[in-house]
Image 1 (cartoon, rainbow, N blue to C red):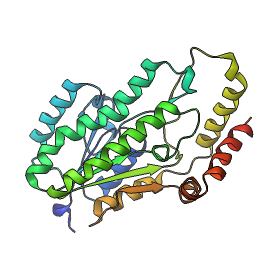
Image 2: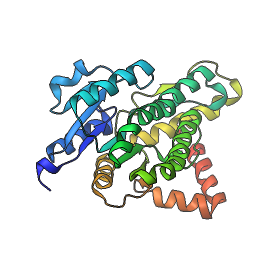
Image 3: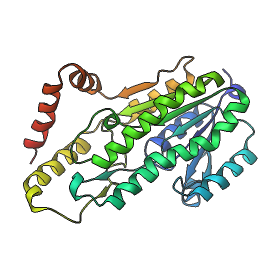
Image 4: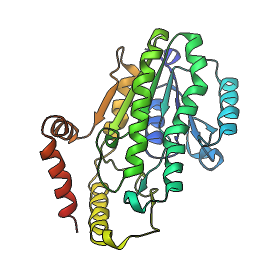
Length: 272
């Protein structure tokens, strides 16, 4: 496929992490890459692809972004929903307002951007929607209740939407990484208020287990490669867990649930 035939790919949250790595790789391969950032002026001089302003939490921003996008390009082949962040903390100690904001970005923001672009995909009778979820969208570890819930919601939404879009030749895929070395952990918001004494010992171990996962995370190349393969695939799969331990994690959860739950408990109990 020559450069002129390469697809136009939109990547939300393309100024850092998976989004930036993916955008750079696709640009180098000759794709027409369009990224988004809440503050594109901060990053535009550092990247070689087009960067547009978008705050997925803001309805007006989504509307103005969509208008600008189609002034810039008449065709869009792939949407990669990548923007999002992580709230950490024990469920009872996390303020509900913080939990709502987690959903506002990770779930509703993703839905709003997708819905804004669906008329375009339907009109051209084809398209790809690839959403970066997380392995916690398939399992439920402690200390990440609202993040886990937001990713479960995203998984469920697209699991249903894919059937509705099949008639328009719009393919829907999810990418579910384990811990990978990105800025997700460093940009995470911790629920630091409202601590309950009963949880003091457990909280310390849970935080240590979460940090251990971040510290021992894999290099992010596998996630970028998976998304690239989904863009190029004629028949992309819906669910695409990524990471060395994903197969074992999902097998244990499905077929040996007591062993799976025991491994979760052990990982917290052994953390220091």
